[in-house]
Length: 288
Image 1 (tube, rainbow, N blue to C red):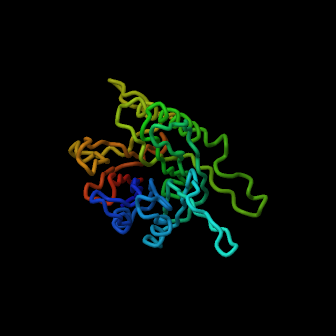
Image 2 (cartoon, rainbow, N blue to C red):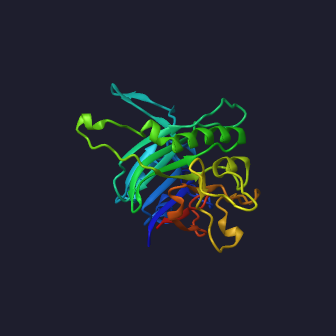
Image 3 (cartoon, one colour):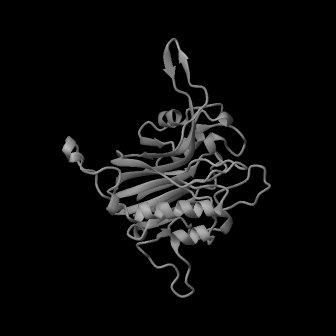
C-alpha cells in the first residue's frame, strides 16, 4: 500500500438521505494519509449551526488538521456579561494529515459581485506535507459552482500560484531568523477538490491542456495531469456528484490534479461508490 490521498466534498455533513452524520464522513476517509475536504462549515443554518471543524477533529483524533475559511459573516456576535462572543458563518476547506503539516496558507481566488445567485469567496488551502517522494504541496480546492468565466479566472490564479511557487516562497521564508526551521520549498504539488467542472470543458483544458489526437496530454511543467481517472471501471463508477432528488444527471466534478513532477508517481485512482455522507463521492489516489 502506498501513500493514500483522498478528496471529499462533504456538503456540510448532509448526506444523500438528507441526514447530518459526520461519523459516516469520517469513516469514508479514515486510513488515508492526506485528506482534503470541501464545504466544511461553522454555523451553517442547513446543518443546525454545527462546528464541523471541531467534530471532524474529534472523530479523527490521530490526524493533524487545518481549516481555511475564506470568509466570515457575522450571524450573531454579541456581548455576554461584558465579554465579546464572536459568532460567524464560515464555509471553507480542510486538510487532515497523518504526519505534521509543515506549512500552510489560504489562497484566495477571484470572485465578482453576483446578486442573482449565491457567490461565496472561494479559496485553495495549501499545505506542505512530507511523503515518500519528498515534500508535496497538497491543496484543498473549491471553485465557483455557477460561472465558467469565474472558474477560468480562479484557475488562472491558482495555476500561477502553484506553478510559480518557487518565486514567491510559499507560506513563509526566512523563519530561521526567529529560531524556527525553514519549511521545505516543495516542487511537487497536487490540486484536490471540487472543481465544479466536467472533463474536456474549457476549464478542464485550462488545467490540463488540450488532448492531442496523436500525443494525448504530455507532461508539461506549466500544466497539471488528471491523475484521478479510475482505470478499468464503468463510466458510471467514475462520476462523483449525484443529485439527491434525482433530477439532474450525475457528473464528474471532483478531481486530483498532479504536477508534471508528481504525476508519474500517482496510480490506482478510484471513486468510493459506497459513500452516502454527501451528494459527492470521495476520490482516492495513491502516491507510489
